[in-house]
Length: 226
View 1: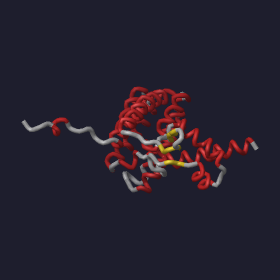
View 2: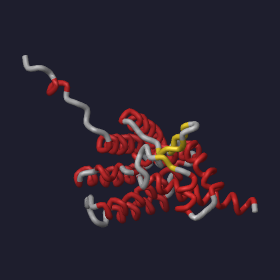
View 3: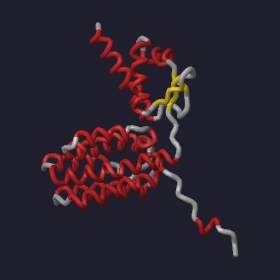
View 4: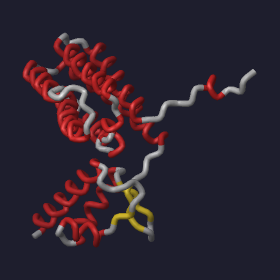
């Protein structure tokens, strides 16, 4: 019975986490055990445990005596997340360049071929397709780094809905640039050039941040005419 309960809680956690990452729940909306238990067709006990874990992950926010809410993210929060990604992903790419084997480099090329199969098409269907492949690309890079602790930190940072939805903000030109970054990081891995890999990955994440956040105001444009 204990094993069954644990499995149910784990399944509820994974199901709710996937929905949160996809953005199925609006930021700030209140989630109740009753509602979710009915939707998942489980008892409230595994849902309660799943909600606790998701609060710990930062995907939900618990307010005592009020309830559990889908986390909201300010522009400053998003900047902080992307700064963390820059540090982690560039370091992971540098480590991977020294340790990655030919089979993983071949796997990255195959994944990137699939990513680019429809060109820089920004239709919702294609972006959803690319999103899963993109996560697999970065998962292979993380695994190749050999640093499990850093990879776990990165996984927590990128499984935030506002990060996963970055592709939805891309223009065709920005998507094509992302493709180019992936190709170049593969070249850096093939060359075993850690510094090159770090630099490309840093540019890649910074470009994603630029697409996700509003551009800062131009001080010159805001100045009073003299």
